[in-house]
Length: 242
Image (cartoon, rainbow, N blue to C red):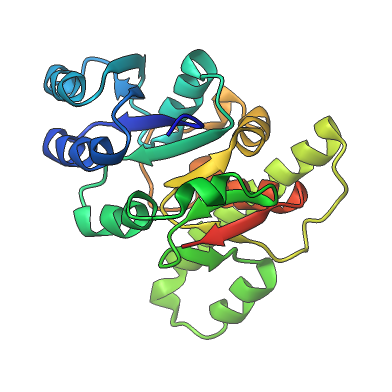
């Protein structure tokens, strides 16, 4: 499809190859890949990608325990002159990956959707969810036993990152303060999004926001996961779940 560019952050060899196989059935022109520097599987992943796509562009990033570092660099260096981005990354949980990307790859009216002016993001209806708020977390905190408090703490850290990114958006780009408004996001950070959604989200994130370790919640990348949806709402565009 001529209006969509693909960016993929890949690390696990088998899971990456399976993901590339699926995507190439529908999109086999060009793919922009980010890889971890000096990772043992890079050669196998690239060889497989080149067998499936007509053109492969690649960037390398340090291992920071998340995919967004790679996406930011890939988009910055290898973005194409296309209005939409399809972003994917490998996961050990292939079932989770399939729930995220199958609705997009199997969508029969995808071209109609990307040509609909008020749609800003497209993703799986099985993975669209409401962003957490301080009020919601305070309520949950009162309902769970003390030995489960770690989950609440890390969710609060994620919400803090969302609020920080919102503040940057207000102060640097002149958006009105809408931080208390409800919004949704696609859990798992695989989606189709308009370029202005990607560009504005990435513009609010500094390289030194990323911590060099993996956590399943509480880091800036988890805030970004939600922030793509928030930016979409700020631009008065629709999150279309399919």
